[in-house]
Length: 392
Image (tube, rainbow, N blue to C red; front, side):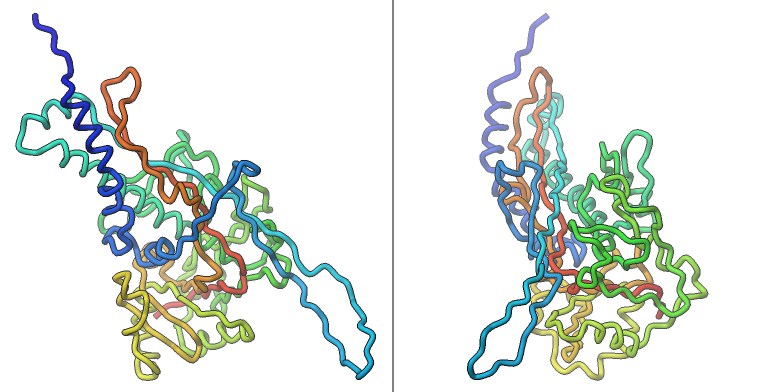
């Protein structure tokens, strides 16, 4: 019986594709208008801030100054001896970036059969790259909207097909090797929490008046919140809303006055608000705002990202946009944020970092992977807010 030895052709193909991988990957991972990305995901990826973590903090800690007191002033006379009133004005907050990866492989059997048919090995590799992109996109959109209350399976896995079961086509993506909720990046609902039980976020206590997002619960609404005492890593989700419609009868019809009251609470801050809106509430807003829009949305940067369900309320510096992920997970909520206050950070080498196709030692497989090292951070919690418990 003849012995077959793998040819150099298969190896050279892998090498040539690996060299072309940066161009191939750019088509997938740098396309902010890709259909698989939800609108909020497009905005956050477009506004992603690259950072560089050094050897002094290999865990990846991003620090920011937090001003929690204001300096005083005094009346001045012509001949004045200045009086200082020293007090602690600032602190340092921080967030720790999280790492995860997606990987695919091609084995020798596939390489053999694809080298003989009408479909090339390039097309197979492209399919693998597309699968990586779809999986990473599905995972990140769920990361952004998660309420951190999903059940982690006994084998340390979160299954998006179960979590997003109400989607028209639930994604089959799974997140493996997760032992606690804090193993992934923060979500928008984790950032925008009311101080009820009390929690720590960004190394700052929610008891601090300057570190409390404005969160409006509709009148009579009994929002379901996590009330377990806050604990680092094991229960960081204290105060997060786990359901915005637990008692449907207590939902309140959305009206323009409630929105106006909500945003006026933050008067004195020059925030430019983006509002993530479920489609049912967006349609209601159309009837309230379409007749009073002071300027068109033709100049909105969101249009460049393929987001065209936009409403502007210029006098309040608000841009509402529709996101279908809200329909699935937050149908009775609107999340407000200033993109200068809430954004993704990523190590500049990992946003993402691609490993070209390589031979996996002592196996019949070649593998590729995409790695992430990032976090959703908030540098100013006056620049985020939420309205829970509203219905059209």
